[in-house]
Image (cartoon, rainbow, N blue to C red; front, side, top):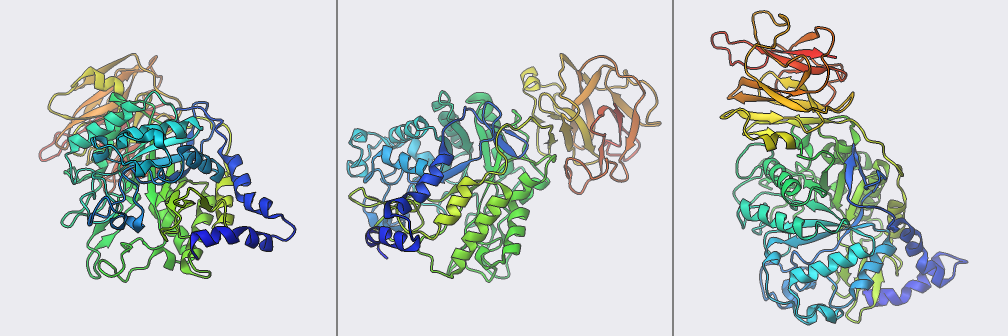
Length: 627
């Protein structure tokens, strides 16, 4: 049904569907119930406490977001960019957020509030930042005050309007170039059509540009990292395609050089492999974080994200025809199978507390067409997926929030026709409305969220991994060695026998230290707690907060003066022939495939022992744990 006809029939249909309710009341039902959820009673900046995002007062801030796309591009990559035909679904955004040709900025923002949104994911392209060509008058026909502006200047005005209305804004680097995403299009990785240096510098530019606006709350580092024609992205291999390393470095640079208040949002890997039956291919999403997670220079700033659509699948690219395989799509899964896959691939990060990977998970894209047929697999998938989000109390962002009424693309929540008339979820009979209302009005955890203890992972696999701002300021404390240090406030609690991995924690209280010491010999050994082994031990009043390695071998330990000397000799934890950890392995698998030693949560590591015997790799063999 054409949107214009749908809009005319909606009041009659609503009255028929809701006997005894006036047409006006029925048409306003969704808007009235959801707008209450969008009240801007919050204080920026945002941070995290365990699996929850909180505001500056510690109040839960569940991201109920919409994607307002367009500034990252709608051009498909062929045909005339100036004409509508070459743009996705015929919707030409004009290189700015979609819809400003037909609706005022204020009207769009007001619609978001009516939908119950409290935040907006606002995509941009790197090309947009350097695009000096003014937008066309036609692209801002409904907003004449924007005439003559560059795309970035329009983006500025959009950010100001959204935050001025009390909405949080998450900056999203969607593409390198200004064009529609996502395929084999030159935008597969953060560094496909540009250098890593340019990508990082662009993020510093954007983070600094809006740092005085506390309602610009997040940096969503890159969208749907995926395979190019020849190469896969990876998570932890240390090469130019390593998304884990790139996002870790970019996040740290943003927090230390541009804006320490932003949430750093890292999406999982969207696709690897060749989508042909018989070849390996999959959608890893956030599974790699279970054994290799980020530890940012500022604790409480990491959010993970993932995308789910009915037509894609855990091993299905989403393609029809070329690139299509016989693997099931998400819509082909039963409700139980879908829930299990979504948990395995994404929601486990928030659902398993106390692990090195525990963080909020933002489902930053999902959506479905309003014209999906009754009884269709698409409708069933959407209802099932909403059930999953509600049960998990998950943060979310619907794609897309805005569309053109006449385009035939029925995925949006708000549609505007060429005359500026609005239709969609708030104005029409829309089968998605009941599920949407339930999604935006259901929040299991509300109010104040108390601070929680955390565990963090150290992974100096390919270079230094110093998560302490204080130690970074001290310079190179073991030249030539790979160094790792816990975030400020945390102490080391575990090490791997091989692989150089570490686990830090602030369970039983944060570590506050006044001085540090690098130990490279046995001068502080209190007693023979590992007979026949070389022992690097901290002074009596210090806790181990870092270490260094040369190749696989122990090079030094980093000790922080943390208070008065501890009574008792402590205990020795051996892990050279198997894991030696508290029951259940608290913190998760921080060194997959390697033996691990770990002190209890009410202990700290006071020393590390290793052997220099012939052919020994001089890797850690034992820990001295003290209460």
